[in-house]
Length: 126
Image 1 (cartoon, one colour):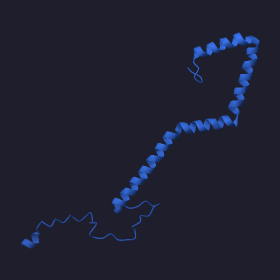
Image 2 (image 1 turned 60 degrees about the vertical axis):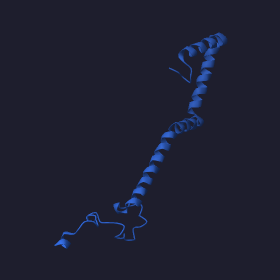
Image 3 (image 1 turned 90 degrees about the vertical axis):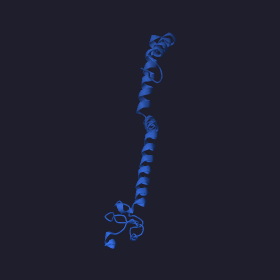
Image 4 (image 1 turned 90 degrees about the horizontal axis):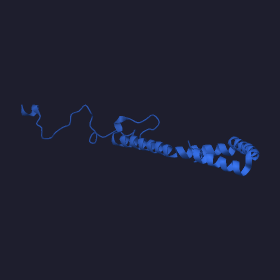
């Protein structure tokens, strides 16, 4: 378990150095001062801002991917609408060519079979 990049063996070493330098009585005072400082720090507005910024930076790649995916889906919808205008448009966006009627030369009805000029009409042979 690491706390702020300090492992258990390093923490024990720091505590031993503190006991040797400060002594038992001064170490209690130093512990209280550090505890109060950390308590004030965690309750402060700047710590909350730091946490929010940290979360935003951590989630930034995920959010960018979501936005890019949404833009790609929107571009795909627009492309499909341009390629096949018969599929209709979404209620939020009217299609740009909705007032003009499609010409018979460019678009065939799905119910009509395609006409092959090399085929002979059975009625013409009779």
